[in-house]
Image (cartoon, rainbow, N blue to C red; front, side, top):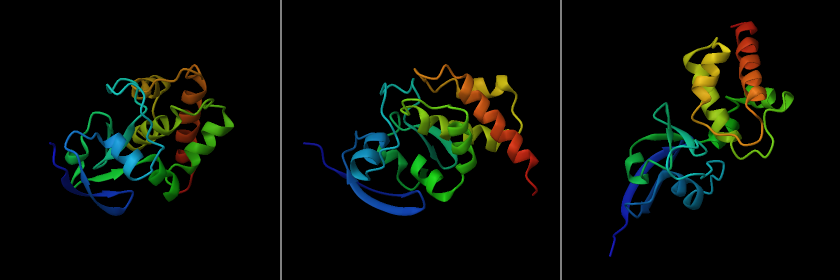
Length: 161
C-alpha cells in the first residue's frame, strides 16, 4: 500500500499544503487537486509541451515532474500569469493575429513565449521558432504564433520604461 506524502509549495503566489501519492505528477496534481485546468496533459512523455508550467522561474514539463519534487518550490501556471496581467499583451497579440484555434496548446505556448521574452526581449523569428519548438500545435501552422510573439516583443520595446 502506498502512503500519501505531505507536500507544501507555492502555486500562483499562494501556499498549498497537500498529501499526495508519491507517483502523482505535477500536471495531474494541478488539474485534479487544485482545479488549475489550464495545464493540459497531452503526451505524458514531455514531448508535446501542453503541460508547461514555471517552477522556480524556469519552464518545465509538469507531466515529467512529480508533485513531491515541487515541494518547497514556487510554481506558476497559466492561470497565475493570466490573473496577474503579466501576459495580457501577449494574450491580446495571440487573439489579434489568430494565433490560436482549438486552444489546447495555447496556455503552454503562452508560457513558453513569455519565458523567451523574459530571456530575450528582442528575439529573431528563428529564435522564437526554436524556443517554441517543444510545444506542438496541430491547428495554426505556427506562423501566426511566431507573428504574435514577434509583435509583442516589438510592442514591449516601444513602451516607455
